[in-house]
Image (cartoon, rainbow, N blue to C red; front, side, top):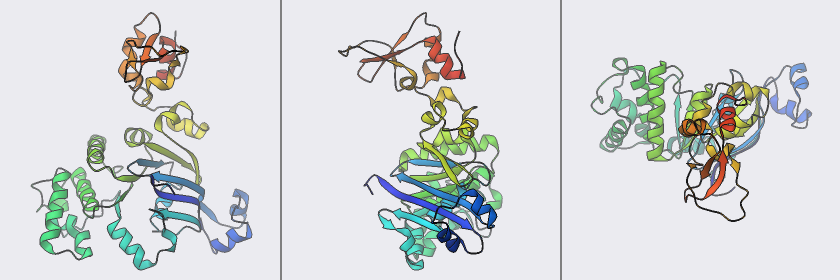
Length: 343
């Protein structure tokens, strides 16, 4: 496990039924769909392996029943995997005792869920400070930390409000502040914005990006919304029928979907924001690098589309040092934007 990897999942299976462990043994830990169906078992997660890197936002998505929420519950051991391994900072999480696991959750993990989970009889200050209270911190210390988190999420001045006095977006901010109060190493979020109105949801996504730029947390985020995923994620994993079908950057997924299932998710993606110029340019064949002017390869195609589409010929693509690394023309730009050949 490299220093860059914070969570390592290997060959995770979560099977529901009368005797999942026995079922897996009978099938050499590799049952097929037919065996699951014939013996009345549900393979909620099937042989899933991936790493989560420090400081990244990994978004796992899929349709209802795909296994996306089950895998996050396996990582946190809210549900124990049937077989497989989960390592957290190099430690075998499945070997941790119940007492050790409670301590890890209290001090290392922050969790935010769709239903907010606020305590209705407690005000904002008390809700945010609650996990610190569970840890046994003195009142002055926990309230100082809670106040810091309340300010961080933009709710300063509402410390004495009760959940019923807050909007949906404000309630979710309280949930986020509460999860951050313990200063977790890893932040788990399971469809945290899906219950919000579209405008509030967009605002919360922007808030989430702002917080991540400040805090640089390792984040595992569950959603069913591909546009939300592309806005927030460093990498996206798409699940289907318990399998992890593809795990890649948003750009790679849009340009090279693994199959028709993934392609269906990506067909309405905001390609202008996701795809970079360097991903679709024609690389230069010059033996010696030369400086020049042109569009920067790191920019999104949406940022340079007007310039390229209005050009009569190819436009140079340059790196950060103004070295020409390729070119892009109207035809490539049109295909990248709309998925079809240009005129």
